[in-house]
Amino acid sequence: MTPDWRLPDPHFQPEFYRDVPLKRFLAFLMDTALLLVISVILVVLTLGLAALLIIPTWWLLNFAYRAISLANWSATPAMRFLAIEFRNADGTRFSLGDAFAHTLGFMLSFTFFPVQVLSMVLMATSPRAQGLTDNILGTVAINRRAGR
Image 1 (spheres, one colour):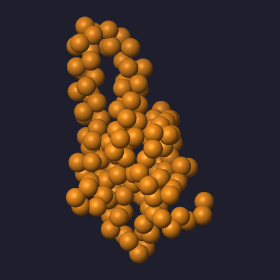
Image 2 (tube, one colour):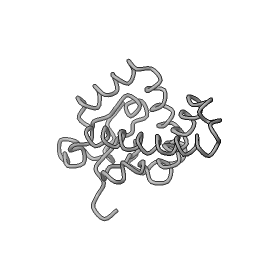
Image 3 (cartoon, helix red, strand yellow):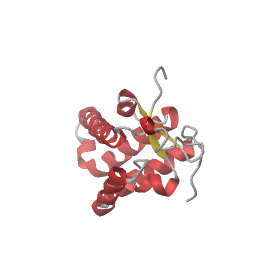
């Protein structure tokens, strides 16, 4: 992939990528905790029916939560709290298609653990802290500017 000059350069603008892998990990933990609470509420509201289908329920809930929040804010609620957001290859915020594709990549990488490990290694070692899905789609997670 050729470099896109509309994205912040990690060598000349390192502040956009500073602590992003750690923030992404913390956001993942926070979003997962919130999704767990939502899942418990869903199980209670369905009188236990959701518990019988917990794997597909969790997958669909997780997918909807991430895709909808990424389409609206280019970040999940926890990512917003930690002041990071995604940008696509041309430097703009995510569209619905970007959000869907990124969420699908995220969910597939968690379905196959070795793929997730590879993604984490890439985030920790690449100049733009991009995971596998980010590399494939040309997306990046960056620190948000103040006041946004």
